[in-house]
Length: 138
Image (cartoon, rainbow, N blue to C red):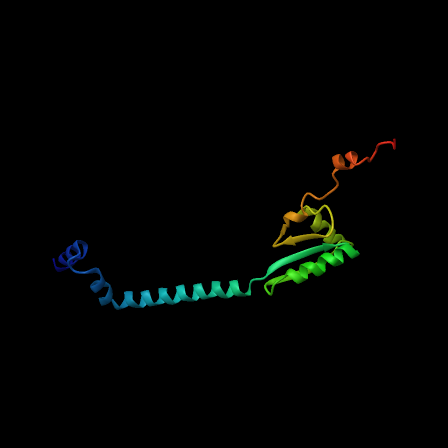
């Protein structure tokens, strides 16, 4: 009967939820463990974010235009940017560039995505024909 009375008081709010929670040592330990776990998780995520690097890949043909672009990119990069220059003369690099949609060089990939300024820059047959390609000189 006493247990039923306790539960009725608890459910009705007359016993006081905080009083009940504070009275339970096992629950207090559990709450402390949860707080520590949350703190550790939050700090782990912060540490990971602090150590995270933005991956910058520059696809290059080792020409003067590419060298100038590489210098510009390295000048713009911050401490959290990890710039790597990839030589398109390497077959594996060329295959990766193709899979990313690289159509002209130099090309920049930031965190695995081809930069907007480097996409859709391949040969444009319509523009070439408009410029006179394939037409006799008048």
